[in-house]
Amino acid sequence: MIRAGLLCAISALPASAQVQFRDQSESLPPHQYIGGWEHFVGGGVAVFDCDDNGLPDVFIAGGEAPAVLWRNAGAFQFDPVDMTTLTGVTGAYPLDITNDGLMDLYVMRVGPDVVLAGTGDCVFEDVTEALEIPQTDQWTTAFSAWWEDHPRPVLAVGHYVDRSDPDGPFEACDTNTIIRPHTQRRPHMTLENGLQRFIITYHYGWMELAPGYCALSMLADYDARGALTLRISNDRHYYINEGHEQMWDTGSGRFLGPDDGWQNVSLWGMGIASVDLTGDGRDEVMLTSMGDQLLQMAEPDGTYSQAPYAIGTYAQRPHIGDDGRPSTGWHSEFGDINNDGRPDLFIAKGNVDQMPGMAMEDPNNLLMQTPDGTFAEVAATAGIATTDRSRGAALADFDLDGRLDLIVVNRRAPVELYRNETPATGNWLRISLRQDDGNSFAIGARVFVTTEDRTQYRSLRVGGGHAGGQAQPLHIGLGRAREADVTVLWPDGSESTHRADANTLLTITRP
Image (cartoon, rainbow, N blue to C red; front, side, top):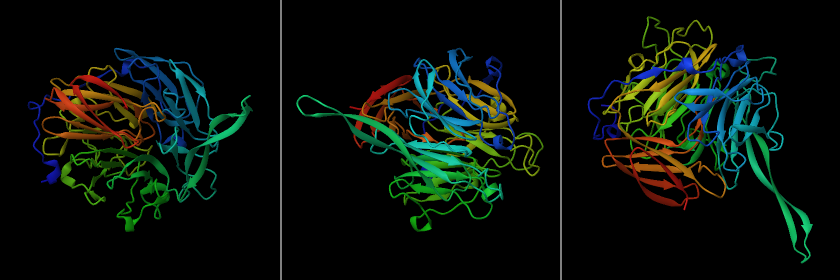
């Protein structure tokens, strides 16, 4: 038995049709993520709608090659968009930094990062200097963001090895950065009635977050205690003996330790994914690594435990071929591939470069969750078990047919695109949140979707994965259910309830 909370009665779909993807990669413009050792890591993809037509567009890192922006033209056709040439890009995350209701991009680089503000119709303006984003020569490999009591977000920026350290790269992990917004109010003019008119401007200030242990992924979200924390996944390859995974409490501004119930874990951390698997409103957390992919279960006392091996998510060796060496996991992401109401798990795999102790032919994983809460590998029969050196990836509904498709970024190999053609999938619901007074996309909201046989929980957040993330409506599989009750706990603490029909996009503006 796996765990009592996982063994809930679930009204499953008919003995499920085989998961099936169709390779659409030949329709993509040419692009590869390339470069030397500074681009062994990274290679992320940001998925968001830059022209407000409902179709997900993509921004893809290029490493030593220029990053690209592709507009989704429908029918799995993507058109390149002319934009400022940016090289040295490791990845990007979409979010509304400028608080104008349009999606922006935080672009991570080897060298100074860039903030691109969306102005509409997939046009972007470089506002890095205007926002006073720190311009350093650091090697940025991780990012997350959250909102506090300000219209603009707090930004967490993770850095890898300190390239300026002459004794590096081993034991030369760089510090990370917290960038906080502040408001400046200054007199502009005195009116005839003696009152003053003021100009209000927004700026960013920053602080070091130390120690750093070579961050490769960050995720600000509610932890097992229900508190907003910044989880940092770090690469043991460079911190060697002294480092570990980190949890930084955003409220108290300190790292958690054993006295807080946080047990330090050391691994070759590459990426973070999280979702509530047990239906208790707490997210389980997947940490990708070399060898074991570690799934941590959220416990009622606010701590985490290691999932049992029998759950089927450790994916520590290739599942096809005869290479018995350990796998290397990068981007991971939960998503309901067949819309049966149970989140499934994709993991991008690939050797760092030529590490002889790790598998060279390392296929990506697609782990489908079964009714008893265990996971079964189906990537090979689904048609997505490629063995290029994969890095970033995303599950997104690129054709809006209600099924999650897949895009994968590879190092020194072309980008892959797959259409989900799984037959007899369940019903679904897409949920988009909006609010008017800052944090326009309601990051930090908690969403509960209830059907006859279960309640599913999701939170809206920025970060996680490996070097890239999404700003898309939440996708919830409903199984046989034809309608659902939706409860939203908004970032300001208010609550609203809604009724939705299946197979629709539900857009909710905070009352």
